[in-house]
Length: 455
Image 1 (cartoon, rainbow, N blue to C red):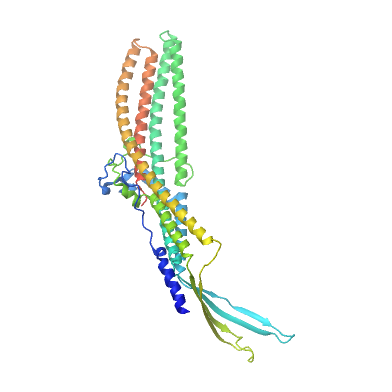
Image 2: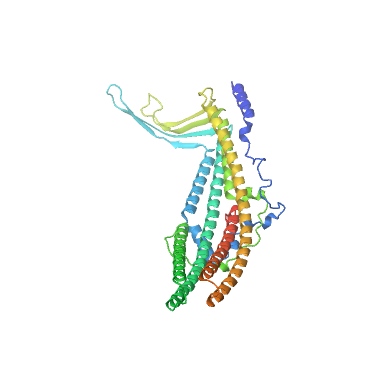
């Protein structure tokens, strides 16, 4: 009989070797040519994503806000609690390899034909130990390890996104400050111009139509100015919420004094597999699904459980009144599933499908990461070109306004032409500020796309 049992176990172990295999990263990942128009030979050590966030964001006021956000943002705190939960689950999976102990005292009163009741009791300590013959517990532990790594990657992803979000909001405020200052100075200039034209109208040197056009332009500028103030207030409120504080003014610097790394090297695409948190999280989800599939396979094989108990009792015999002594027992059980209405086969099929879904999600996460890197690289370059063009446009329009003002004073041009020149100059100045912000934003997006700020 023993030989038969040993033979069954050996055959099952040979057929179940696959349940002991560790997860391996898939080989057919889309890492080739993941970056568009980027030389893959670029030095990985020079990648923007390798820099700490303190090296990228050098404004001390911004650094203070980021530190505050990392300590008080609610999403970060939730992510830390998720990591703690995963650690507890991994600890439970490791302890599953150890025997379980239980103290279960029992007492009874027995009386026959109204006679004197006999008091009996037992004070046993019971133990149960599941022998992990076919990797069920091992795969559960490996899955818990992958889950912990996935939650840690999620925390890093939240941190990276938080840093990028704070920086974006901060630079948005700096952009709005510049636009508000330009709008305010233009309003003062326009207001003085309207006053001058009204004086000229009284002495017949200006037409009513020109004065009303100037007033209408002034009111339109007021609307733009008030809208910028609203945007600034809303951005401050949103940033405060992101930081985990109540709404208040944000101390900040000046847009023109901001500097970011000029080297926008993205490194090699393969680096995303080990640095970008959401890609790592997707891979750990795949690893977890792999070990879950192994657990479903292990369910087809026998389960060996050892159990026993030891304790003290006073019911060892019938002749001696309330005799006491030690009791001990041991039991080994082997359970092999034979017929369970296809439940195990269905569970295995579901697990395999979940594993394939996790694999597709992993590949998609890598493709999304590559797209974000490509978009950010091109956006940074496009913003640089636009900034140069708009600066040249500003220089030309400033000369145009100066010429128009001189001609208007001598009566050689109409007010409409002067109004058009000033409006064009205002728009060009706004565009220069917007281009400066867009370039900063593109660098932030690239840094986040490369997994920067997650450490």
